Image 1 (cartoon, one colour):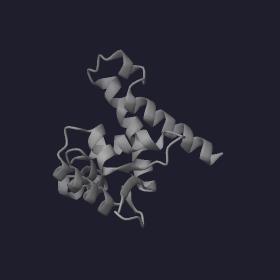
Image 2: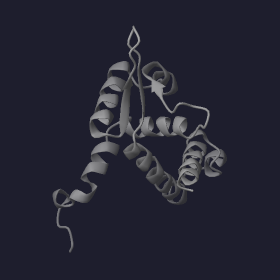
Image 3: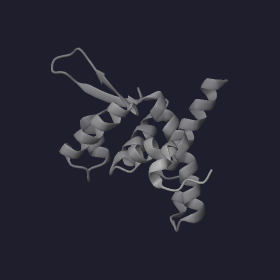
Length: 142
């Protein structure tokens, strides 16, 4: 069946809703970076995220974290301490999305115009993170 309009193609609606909003992709990649680190508890605080992505305003970061939490891409972890300290991590849905992003990254490297050799060799921050995440995922399956 040929889809005659965008509105009829519901299979991509959720993915587009999550990925098309500014900063969401950056945030998922930052969480993937943490999740790919074996020595980490896989969580980030608001201030840690702000440090990693300094271009995002605190208000926008708060909005994006709320959206990604509502959609189930990240989990919010509240501790019982005073003052309350909130941390975030990728949910299983977010981990699955991060693995899909590896394919998107490969596609972009193949057809895009990236001339950064570090990036092309998967030695940049997000390339390393996604590869480590996949290694962890594979080791957990075995």
